[in-house]
Length: 88
Image 1 (cartoon, helix red, strand yellow):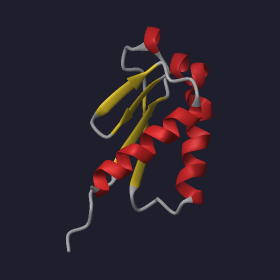
Image 2 (image 1 turned 90 degrees about the vertical axis):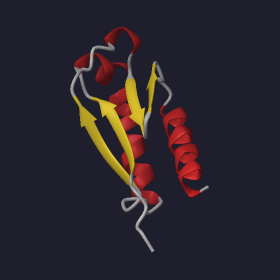
Image 3 (image 1 turned 180 degrees about the vertical axis):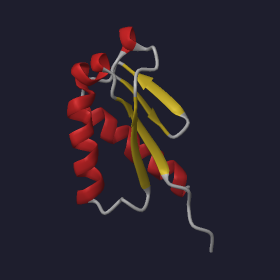
């Protein structure tokens, strides 16, 4: 059976997005992955500024991009939904 592709979760680490909430979101996502044993299902990464500073914090989950999500719990909810969609 073929191995499933990992869900890519990328957070902007540019100074604006990091200060607006991605610093907190990063910790939440790292903890979520560890506590739920999802290291084999999620590939967590970061990137420098992509020019969405006015709309930050900016996050890409799978092939979808999100801006302005300041509540890290919302980031986790989006990840959960993306994993469910992968499993469907």
